Image (cartoon, rainbow, N blue to C red):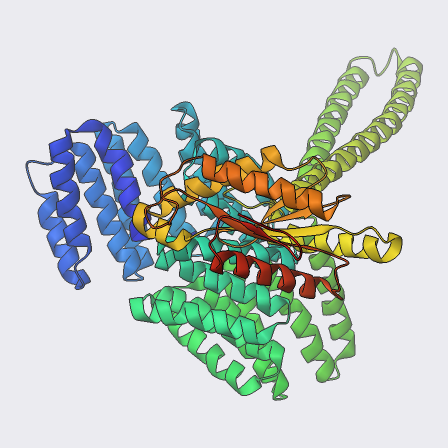
Amino acid sequence: MHLSLRLFLIIVALTVYPRISVADNSKFDQQLADIQRLDDKALVLSELATLMQSADLVASQKFSVHLAIMFTYHELNDLDKALAQAQKSQEFASNVGLKKEVATAHKMIGAMHYYRGENKAAIVSYERALEIFIEMELPVYQANLHNNMALVYTTTGEIAKALQAYQTAEPLYQKYGDEEDKIDIRYNIAGLHIRLKKFDIAIDMLHEVIEKRLQMSDDEDLASAYADIGVAYKQARQFKNAEHYMNKAMDYYLGQKNFYQVTSQYQNLSDLYNISGEYEKAYDYALKTIELSQKVGHKKAFVGGLYTHATSLFQQGQLDDVIEQLALSTQKGQEINYKPQIIENLGLSALALAGKQDFTKSLKVYREYLHEKHKLVNLALDQQLAQFEVQQLTNQVQELEQNKKFQLLEQKQQRQAWKNTVFASVAGALLIFFLYRRHAFNRLKQDLEVKVKQRTMELEVANKRLTELSFLDGMTALYNRRSFDVDMAEAWQRQAKDGEAFQLVIASVDMFHQFNSNHGHLAGDDLLKKIAALFRKHVRSQDRVYRFTGSEFAVLCLSCEMTVATELFEDILSKVAALDIPHDGSDYKVVTMSAGICQSDDHVLSTEQLIDRVDQRLYIAKKTGRNQVINQVVKAT
């Protein structure tokens, strides 16, 4: 999540527009946008201050100017002033009775806390905003808050809470959100897969996001995707790919003078070079991270930069300096509750102590590292169980105190006359208490076991849902390329084992790029959705349909003859043309498709060769007139 100019303009539109006339909307929107696009940010702040004093502005417009000032400070990487301005906008909205704007301001306050590494404060602000948006029945706003909270929980390592937040946000986005919302949630879920160490899934999802954002010319969000896929490639130990994408992200941020994000890329590159063994580069980038993060107030990067610096020093054998750097990293990490990094610091500290031959202390720190690592993985579940245990123990203590007071009072009143009776009563009460305690303990144990089992099942269901989402194309809801690769491998193995051949079809929209140029990307997306729906309707039940690349669809025809598959796709291609969607760039004046088809046992030795053979036939279909299916035997027009 980051605060882009596009996001700011959306916030302005959704908060100001419902309250003023269309003419005033247009004039104010243009004036605010013109100011925001000035290169000199000091001049931007001056112009916004002048605009704020205008007597023509209504309250909701003044609120938007407050947000514009906050956004400008954020662009200048002055997070202290950005947070203060967000708080000022919340006070203003409260004073003038703008309920929706109050929630929006709480959301912005949460975002600023998040950027400052103040994760607990971010959650508090997000929850305040969410409460208002739920009351106002604004589902997309609710989804956005759940999405932002999931990012915070991912940062703090509370994976179960992050999963739950994404599960809440995703169906709201799918039902009420636009295409950008759906892309953003997939982008953020990919980030969660990185934390879960499912790097291949994350990489596939991020490539889909990058492809879509390239089509939208969304440079700022594209840079974020480059940065994250660089991290995924780093963790997957594909170092060249990681370096390539990290540098693409850093080039953009340097060009935009967004030094807050540059700091993050410095830290990522330092960590990358440490892992890949390029220690001199790692050392240089660690120093850059530490220096720049202090200037721009990037607390999380500062903590991580100290760690990567310590790692570089460890390789040089400077063990005392390693321990000193890690102690400072841990101290600053505790200030912002950066638990994952604090735990990694323990691991490296144990190694440094072992290098100094302080084996007793090294073993102690290493055990603490293992213990904290285990706690982090199960943090959300542990917190829920701990809350349950605390409540149960509190009830038991209260009950014990009440029994004790009763016993003391009774003994005092009847000490002389009822000594034997009191003694027997106390003995009986103790016996009952111990029996009750044993029963309560067993009941507590059973309840905890049930809750552990229930929570484990919930996490398994959530994880299964995430895996299912990773196999679907976000726009067409068809299976994606990752799913195709898995199914193709399985079909090939079945053929090798049972001799069961299958057919692969690749179909492509004719002159799709020209269609996009003439009608726009939204019309292109709508076209692909219609074709996807047509394919789903007319293929056989045992066939599998995939979105193969941008405008290409693949189909695996199982338990089928070549002639049957060819005739099926001749019929499907004729139905595509019968949709009668205008396409001036085509010789047919309507949208058509071409296809290549090949059988898996047709003198091919691998899945790669089969795909290449189908691609060649698709190329022939395009070159010899389009709107046709080409196979080895049949050429249909």
